[in-house]
Image (cartoon, rainbow, N blue to C red; front, side, top):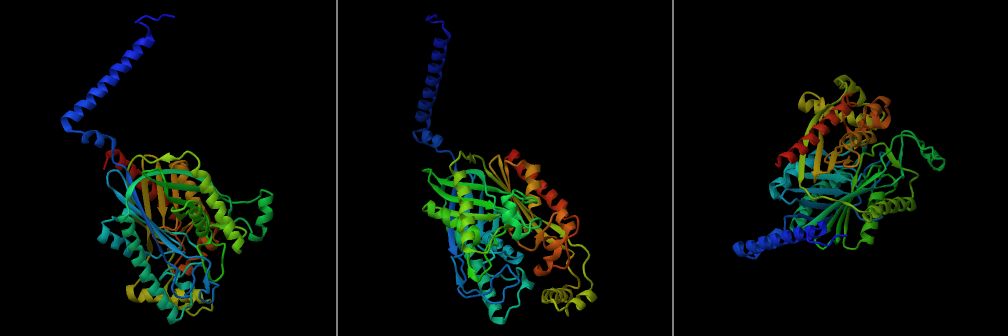
Length: 482
């Protein structure tokens, strides 16, 4: 083997030394011309920032609980507290967005609009940078005008609900302000796991699920993904865990406040990671139930299973978010099918079914005030692009699982998250398949939401087309650097 000066190894060594020398001279020159702060500035490149806050939203009064039409009395106590939590993110270019999660069945459009306007006026958040998400727990309180025709309430309970809704609006604005005040350098990472307790309730009888599960014969589409966004501080300490799952929060149906399985999952993660805030968002679980159910032991079990899935993900190598945040928001006119006539509403107002009668009376009042019924609904769709790889879609209403499965397939299953129950929970959102099949999710539930008719057959294609348009827009913003 040659050891002369012409050897390739020696040449590589000389090249490296030359490169190092040039770099050192460049650093010395930069320091001489611009001062020592120039080197520090080079090392301290802009980074993400994050701030988080929470507030207890457990009702002060024993008021009516939301989620089940069979309830006939107010709450009797609590299993654990309900929370609203806010995570403010600021990307390296200074763009801000806020995610607010709540242990509630749903929020109505008017509350969502009011909170977003408050945040715009007070803190400068544009509409597309605000995301209001509920866990859909069925052991939370009624919020004004959400599932309005489901409950037969006296004046005391209506006052409690009105007062609670007013306080909720103020509380949400308050925690966003607190989170803003806590902004500090952060590292964002994401990944995903799996949890398998969700079952398609349209395709499996609840009583048969244990045997079907044992035999591996559970039927119907499901989405068992568990998306995880982890926020670390500059010292690499875990500060916030944001995670989702596509399943109804309907394990419990009694008269005590609780966050159902999402609440227990959050508590479990916060117990394991002291000083960390856990935040849950609901996926497209409109036709998914946690089965079997109805016991505290089961709700704790499902909470642990979900938390364990998140834990496994946190221990794996995660994807870092190195880029910026881009956000878009739009409302599309989602059409109803054939609207009822005044004569039909007058007839239905005398129905022995109190829910049909209550909806008919409400729609007659709308006719008197507006002269007509609304033929469409302003349906909210929001897309956040976090860095170059993660696309996070958020849809309003109780979205069935077909939407997440389709959108992830079309947009990229390994880089797309799809949330439901966001910004406005106005009704179930069936796919065309579910709409044609009918049933509760396909249209029967519309009476409880007080809407005039089932959705038109265009529903799925209109929503999916709008999502694609928004994703194209955020990605084009990224390419243009805007």
